[in-house]
Image (cartoon, rainbow, N blue to C red; front, side, top):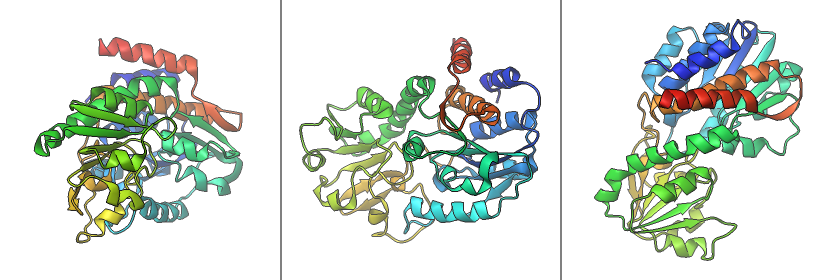
Length: 351
């Protein structure tokens, strides 16, 4: 499948600027991410200098094998339903970083959630980085970063143009459950870009939007009234202490990161232990979809439509180039002029 926007960015960058770079990356192992790495390889990155760890809930085994065939170092670990993903991933990331062999003049950390960026200071001044997610940015925002870190997560282009189709994808995945469980009322927790778009697109009779800073009703009160509860905060919006306040028969859906929205591990441990992050659970009168992980990931080769999500991958590719050429330390905005050019090209392609 051709992704012309990635080819456009590759031509903008040109040359072999990644030839002497070691890449340490945490990414979803999906087709569009593989396509982005192919452009990095074309721009000089050596597969044998590439170290990659995926997330167990967003890994496709076919894509993992494609990386391995390229001689990329892919770190393996197994998901356990009796542990929170964040606990598992912290342990896996530590082991992953211990096995890195630094062979380039510069280390580029491509991160999704900040687990790597928080733990690479030992490499010193040769490090630079890119963060893709808002949850990762929020973890790093108050730190004094000792190296250049490109903030793709909060790029206006990404926020404005990615959020609607991520929300649309979530609604598409939800359709069969809305019918199956006859959900008449919905509560969306989190009034960020994705939460707002989901609230606007959600096809139910009664819907409410909860934000901790502005909602008149308390969260426990809203939980007790809602048939469908969608978490979009990137944090633990419904901790285990509030599980008893949720309406019986309610459906819990994450459109977020990890499995933290509903403290999902505390529901999963009431079922037999397993190694699948895509099972639906019924426990204590509640329906937990996709084991508490984002409903947009189902183990397939694609999550979002490639022709749409290529915009995010193109911005990440730009961020990678900006990171290795940056001379200023700290969290830096993605280049506005070049990201604007990428958006213009994306809109031309979309037409």
